[in-house]
Image (cartoon, rainbow, N blue to C red; front, side):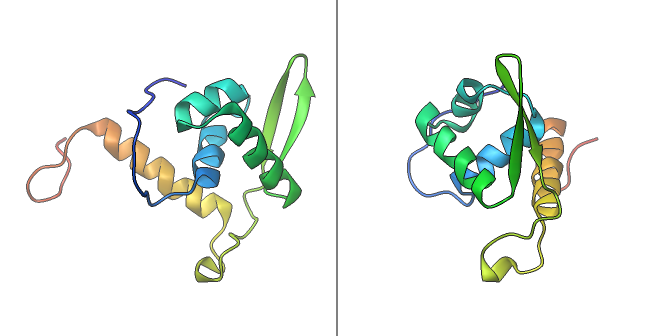
Length: 115
């Protein structure tokens, strides 16, 4: 998990649960230590978030050697009533599209990305 962002203070648009889920989607065999560093969370917080996601059926894991391989349930619907009908796959797709767009470079004044 490269490209760890700078630390941030204040409010953000995404919850820590969404960040952890996105990090796992990026690397389903990532170590808790790496997820924590990427998401700027403590390892204990990531463990709790993973437990929450597993308890509610959004995530499961298989122990492989000394590590885990996670499986995201893409068809699960998000919990908040305002996101009724929005699946985990749709959320992760939006986040992945953003990641691809950011890797292409800065937008021009018109808002379009440079080729």
